[in-house]
Amino acid sequence: MGNRAVEVATAAAALGHCLVIGRGLLLLAAAAITATTTLTAQTTPAAESLLVAARRAARAWQQHDFPAFLRGSSGVLLQLPGTNPSAPLRPAQAAELLRAFVEGAAETAVEVLVARNVDAERAYVEIQRSYTVQGTSSPRSQTLYVGMRRIGESYRVVEVRIVP
Image 1 (cartoon, rainbow, N blue to C red):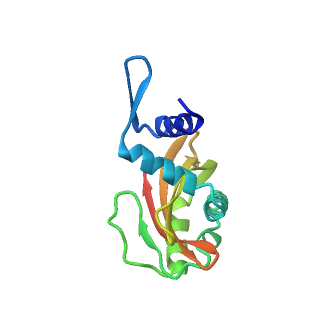
Image 2: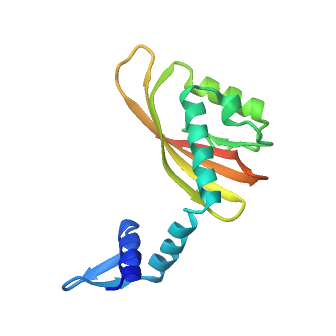
Image 3: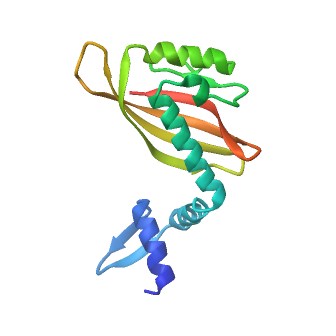
């Protein structure tokens, strides 16, 4: 296989979009080629900017600094565990709801798992949150799905969904 074919096969395998048959003959689905294009697109400066924004959001969450987490957003949709998604909330209102939601929790780790551009203006970030609740030592975790919108040169949080 040529170098480009190996790169495509490696990227496709990493994304789970390939099928190996016989003695290593790879059949790549069209999705693998699309995924490789996406993977390549994610290494552009805009995607790096998304990673910086994702890490900044994770850091703000870890510090329970929700005004910083939502800074620059004009409206935020929230979906907390066991609730329906909200209508767009003002950032101050969303920050207060998030503060109340994490009250009594001590973050032990907050890690960006995925940061992907959906298109030129929209992106999503998956953040894993590990924490303990005050008065217990039992570790817990939740996944935050954070929708972001590119406004000018930076990304702003526009949606937060929290799942157990």
